[in-house]
Length: 575
Image (cartoon, rainbow, N blue to C red; front, side, top):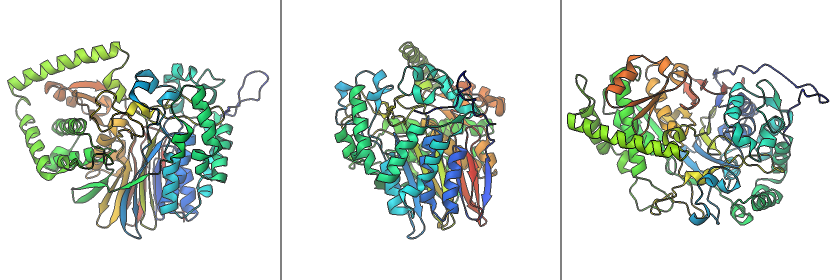
């Protein structure tokens, strides 16, 4: 059972320490890694300094993130990787999707709450299968070696951050009612205080067994049998036969485009890379002055582009495994982007109203209907916009001195996943059952046995010539692609740190614009409202507006930037 040394009478005094101030920007001539937690960055840097390549470092850091950022990811979730190898020169996507259990028939998952919380919300975890596959095929080190930093973190502990305390406090009710309380709440009732040393001996034992026995222990060994027993006891759908069919990742061809003299390569379906490509393709048809997000006109063009791309993604779902006969490239074509840009241009007129009178009338009527629908959803306990803003994931980016690069995004779906954990294993199960379509049986991501969930991830590599220039990605559910997009736009004018830390904007398909109001020009919100958008003010450096991890190679130097919105850091080897 995870524990924290407590100050209560009769127990040892608590171990307290000042919460570290992470190094947000770093430079090195020998490689670089940026992750969403400083301890995971240290793990990846250790591997790079020990002679490992980018894949070795990425796997070590990903395992470490599951320990020191447990609300975001872990071995109970799924992992997606974009990998570039220098020898031979190749860029590929590792689709590490989890899978619905064999017993996940629609009639067994009608209760929406059971898809969000509890053991029945869990799909087959694929993180370990993906990391092991990547390491064996593209890494240089043994699995037991890259697991060492994660095991140390679980055994020796790490310092709880203010952000982690806030997240636990926000989800306190759900945590208290769950089997995860014994691991992630102090005495099972209150959030751990920032600055306290947090140890996870049960998880450490699980990780050590995996290091000794290998990943098959998780899927076909004693750990699998323990998960099966836990699921049967608590009404879960995951069983031993699901785990035994190990969810090895599928190598897929990435999607790509050219933008601002660079080649952008990103993650294919079931990820959201084609949404990013569509956004870039549309923006390519506007003058570069309108790429400036810090002006009212630039912000207006951006939110129009984001909304259009999300509408297309919703209307054109695509599963590359089962629906290969569907043409998924139309929304990424130059011709389509020009047509969309022309429609946006007609609405975004520099010296007049954005909408024609009749169009504005229809838009108002649509919004009123949407507001009524949103009100009904709220009465049912679910706000669509709020739900989209609660997504949780983590990301890391890494480059090595040999020319290899990795962008890796992994998750347990929402914050604290299913809020369920086996008392014998110590990690959180995911709640990816809520990432399926549950109504439309013709939808490619409709819930069915062995189906894969629809993902919003977009780990991305940007090339200058033949070598990766930038490795980038973000958590944030549907906020992922807009966050990456805005950083890429800003890199045309700003330093890497300024591009990552700058204020952000997001627009959903209902025309609600979320933005860090206090950090932006005050005429931008009013300008958008005048043109039919609703404004959702977010706090400065909002947790919900993405968390970009960026690594850049320029002038024979690697530069890393960790987004200040969370607990990330960047670091490179000293030799």
